Length: 460
Ligand SMILES: [Zn+2]
Image 1: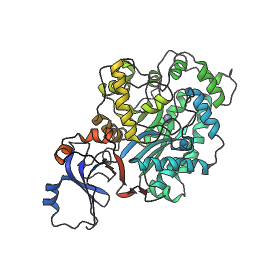
Image 2: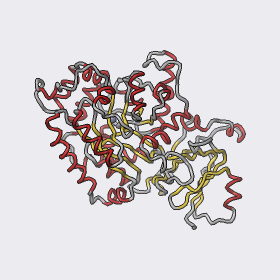
Image 3: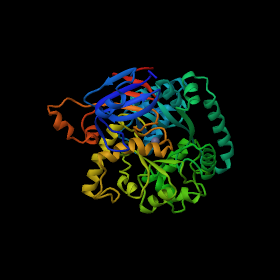
Image 4: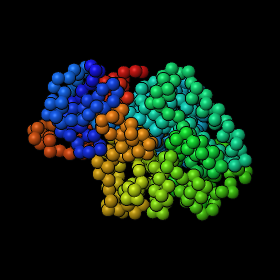
C-alpha cells in the first residue's frame, strides 16, 4: 500500500468497453487496479492513501500503443530514397547499412525507439537485422518483441544457415548489456525469429524457424505479399526480384540458387506458405497488400495475424491493403509503421489518421483491391493499435486495454485547447478526438514506470 498512482483526465479509452468521461485510472505496483468514472472512484477510494495523483484535465488516457511492424535498426535512414521503386530502395538500404558497426546499428535503433516512445508507443514488434533493436528498446524502457531476421534461399544450405542463426540468437539472449539483461529477465522484452519474406527465405529454412518458435510459444514476424513483384516472382518469374536476389545473395544471376524449385508454380505468396505448412497462429504477416478473398480466407483459417502498414505501402508504391476485407474475414489486424526508411515517422496515431483517410479515398474510387464501400472507423483503428495487436502477440492477458489486472502500459494524450463549452466537449467522440483531433503525447507509462514524463524521457 502507499504505492498507488492515480491518473485523471477528461476521457479514458479502455478499448475493451466504452470510453469513460471524467475518468480516473488507478495503478498499484505496476498493475492496473481499476478504471472509474470520478464519482465511483471517490466513493471507493475516499479513505485510501494515494502515493501520486496526476490530473491531466483535457486529455485522453488509454493503453500504450503497440507497433506491430517496424525495423528500428534503419531509423538513421530517415527520408532515405523516398522516390525509388521498391526493390531499388531495398537494394539501396542494404548498400547503405551493410558496413555499419554494432554501435552504429544501436545508435540508429535508439533514435527510433525514442521517437516511438515520444509518440505513445509502449510496445514495439520489431524485425531486427542486427539485433540491436532489442538493446535500444530496453535502454529506452519500452516493451518489445524482437525477431532476429533470417535470410536464405538455398534449401541445401538451410541447416548451416539455421545453426548460424541459432548462435547469433543465443549470443543476444545471453547478453550482458545491462538494460537488455534486465528486460529479458523480467520478460518485458522477448526475442524471437523473423524469416524475412517468401522471396528471401526458402521453405525448409522457414520451417525450421516456425517449428522452433512454436516450441517456445513465440510469435514469428515476416513480410508477406508486400509487392506485385514478389507475387510475380513466386507465381512465375520477375526480373526485378531476380536482379535484387543476385545482388543481396552476392551470387551469379544464372545460379540455380536464384531460381529455386519451389518458386514459379503459379501460387500466391499466401498459398505458397500454406503449401509448405508455414501458416499458423504464431505468424504475424506484415503488409498482405496483394491478397485476394481466397488468400484472406486461408489466412483466417490458419489464424495468421496481419500488420497493416499503409504509409510504408504508399511511400514504396506497393498499393493499399484490403483492410476492411481483412476485418470482414475475421482476421486479427494490427497497425505497423515499418521502418523510418519508408515512413515519415514512427507515430502510430499518424498511421491511423492516414489509414482512416486512405481507405476512404479507396472506398470512394473503388480502385483499391475492390475495397469499395467499406472504410474503417477511428474506433477500429484504435483497437488495431492496442487490443488487436495484443491478441496478435498472444499478450492480451497482459496488455492492450485498460482493465483491472493488466500491466500498466498507459499513454496519456493531451487534447488541444478548444473554445467549446464543457457540455459540448463531452458530446465529442473520444476516438475521433484521438485519431483526428490533434492529440499529442504527454506521458507514457510502461510496466508501471514513467518512460516519458512531461515531454522528457526518464531514461536515455
Ligand atoms: Zn518491414
